[in-house]
Image (tube, rainbow, N blue to C red):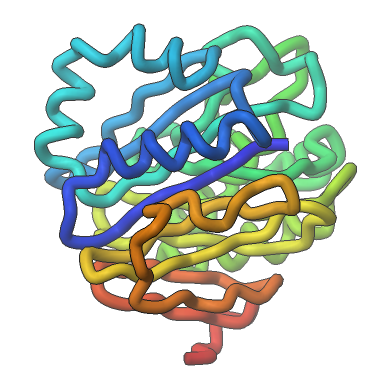
Length: 262
């Protein structure tokens, strides 16, 4: 089981996102930690194979993290507790995960039958290079970002590419279920979330005056992991089988066929 979180709004958000990760980690992570931010139409990604403490030890004095701290408003993050030990103990298996051109990045909370998904969809992966390939197997979450890249390269808008990927991949859920993934692009000031079936984890989005926060929720997690003790200006209910678009000043919800709900 893993945890994801993120922010889009008016406030520099590195410390906010790391704080959320720290609250998620004891319950849903610690075996891999990573963040990705959009800065000036570039994707800046940092990750390690360990927990948040190890992440800070590796990056706290780095120019990359300082740049994100001083300029990063839109970001997503991941803390990892994999369901299998096969993809473990290497930084490349931690999230976020890139597409081939490093213009898209994804974090995923859930589980897929990656072998079957890869075999059934193999044609769309022609020419793709997978960072997590190991003994002929590919991490399930990396298949998602490459599927999005495939549809986007064929002319789909990014929301449609995510919708098409979601429509296919959610039928390959295993263990606790498909779950949810979040995507950012170097070209857009939005966070896109595909929210699917999962037996334990759900998604919560909160609105404060400065922006929108999202994070994983389950029975073990306190829902107030964003700003404990501070009043939220609202929350947005999330239903399964939706595409959710978090913009700087609003959140949009779409059914799977991408017809606008609200």
